[in-house]
Image (cartoon, rainbow, N blue to C red):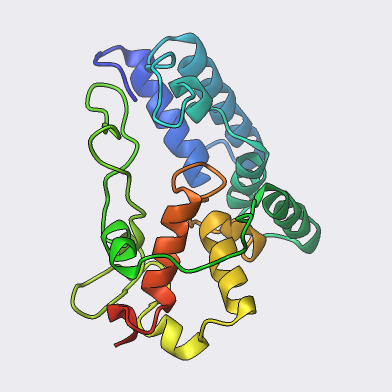
Length: 229
């Protein structure tokens, strides 16, 4: 997303973005709220006005780099929660949850499991949505779900530990209607269950199609899947 440049303002923009994302404050100010506001204003100015990013480049989801850099309501709320460092309060959590629930679109024929073998390929694929000078080309390869990055899945491969282990998920939970809905919601927009979670909104952000979600769900829930062996 960055342009190839050694421009100091662009470096400052990147630094400001990292400060805002991490909830960091300027050293020695003694006023975290003021420092946060200054960092946020600096990031806004340098990112959107200094032309340090490929803002007009088309993205795979049909928008532009500028749209990607602009936070939606959920991101703004959750960024504020991260900055205050006190966790999310009940009222804010309900706001985020309601936004998430409103974003979820269910398949016309109801929630069904797809092909677990296709789901396995998606779950272990990190191919995605890079743009700028080295874009991922979806014309030749579909994007993956990168589940392995955060979760342990089937035991034939090693996954991540940021999120809970999903090994035996279907064996433990079955494939009842409530389980299908929970799994679909978690993949489509996990904020519906866990407001301000770090898990991506695969369906709401158009990263995975309904069919791809069905395939990933099959990998997690189908009794024949290696996840449940």
